[in-house]
Amino acid sequence: MLKFPLRSVALAVLMAAAGPALAAEYQVQVQQVPDLKAVYGKVESRDIVAARARIGGTLAEVTVTEGSAVKSGDVIALVVDDKLALQLEALDSQLKALQAQLDNAALELKRGKALAASGTIAKARLDQLQTQVDVLTNQLSSTQSNRAVVVQQAQEGRVLAPAAGRVLTIPSPRGTVIMPGEPVARIASGGYFIRLSLPERHAALLKEGDTVEIGARGLQPAASIGQPLRTGRIVKVYPEIEGGRVAADVEVDALGDYFVGERILVLVPTALRPVITLPPEAVNNRYGVDYVKLMNGNGPVDVPVIIGGMMNTPDGKRLEIISGLHDGDRVVLP
Image (cartoon, rainbow, N blue to C red; front, side):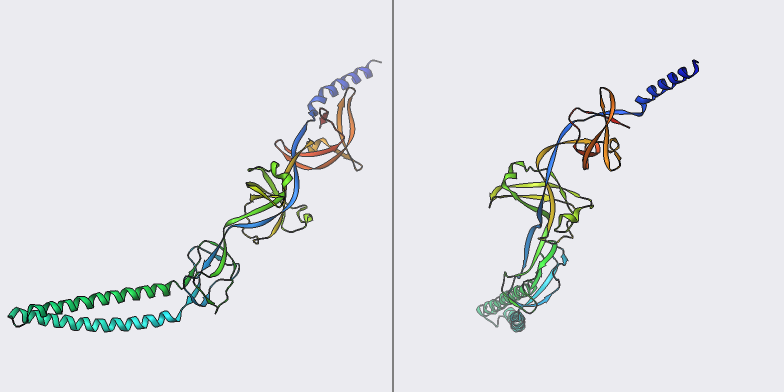
């Protein structure tokens, strides 16, 4: 008669002892998280520099195309001025004539010195021969310097890349006559960043150092669904509001393959909103309805809840609970 009640009591004691070991409580707390606003940013380069012609002439050669990667100092084009070749020929002829005159004057000076040793030539004539040699020597040196200037001008026909980057446009095609200082190519250099333009009501909420989420390439928000988001950082908020909008710059890694001017979806924190989150294992789905075990005075009861998306929190992955729970509720975890 007593065997059955004693067995039931023992089983109840074992279940009571095992209950705390298999379950734990999680106290619900309302947290303030950034409310992300989807906006479009534009990919910009930090600097856009122009590779300019240093001399006037004809654009004889262009060694790059739009999209080519260049390094600082690379030769990207060649400007040829036919007059420089003619000037070099003229100077070379002058140098030959001056050299011949100088050789003749030096020979006469040598003879004059020999005659002066025997006293058969006047001292004034010897000075005259020496002066002639000096004048021709200086003329030869001046002409050589003029030739070096023309050679340098011809070398400046090489158009050099002023900085490393990617060629955006080449305004002047091959064969075009260009003037000194005219741009031959525009180069995007200094790395890429994202330029944001937000309504001024968000100006006070933007801070340098805030993190943003970068969506997948494509102008449709649906393109980012299911795609991993990248994290960027606001590095500059411009102090001037123009046209009712505030500008901000965002740094993101690996933007080198983007087009300059390409638009991209950016999720920007613009406000704080209260949320309730739970560990994913606290939610149990039965017949399409999500439940959590809520502890009350009479023990755990199943309460239906509406869940949102998964969120990254300092405690790890958490499910957002849209409705069904309140601050301070105690949820039973498995």
